Length: 253
Image (cartoon, rainbow, N blue to C red; front, side):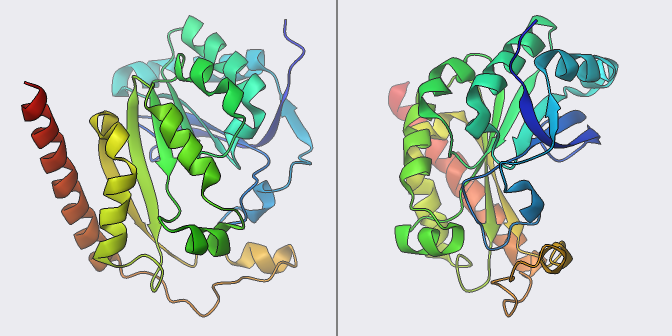
């Protein structure tokens, strides 16, 4: 039995939006980013009280395995930023794969780099959040430069699973075609693995947590993103992605 324990924020047992099929989602505590629109600011601190072992994760997941098998689902590790607890995540991934459970990591690409290659061996799907494409805006929006995401994207060139790109579209920050084109440029080296790009419209839900935690909400004056307009951007960027993939495939045929 392992002595490693993960710092846990919460568990969602029947998740439908954090990877394919029905999923059990383990949200881990702690994140180096301070995204201005974060809807779980209580998960940012690394001083979470709850802990969990890999054995406990497997035991929880096995209760829902029939749902995974019926829907193509599995377990997703989210956060916070799960890759900040990479040694534990690796152990838990191995334990899940031994039980035939599909795995997914929801990440912003800021973690412990030395573990990436080994973690990828036991991961079927990655949900990658791209916060922005320009370093200055990224720094303002998250508190960190783009070094982490760039290193992660480079590491992903050796990943054989599926990647879904996610981007929260914020009015005035990324609701323009140039940013969409820059996202496509960023992911070009891994585009063969990318199944789709989800454009998530910025919303105000969860802002009450900031007042409860006595944290100022930096985007107070920014309106929610128009969902219909975000859907248009999503349709267009995915059409371009598929065209680029088709073109790349034809060149190698």
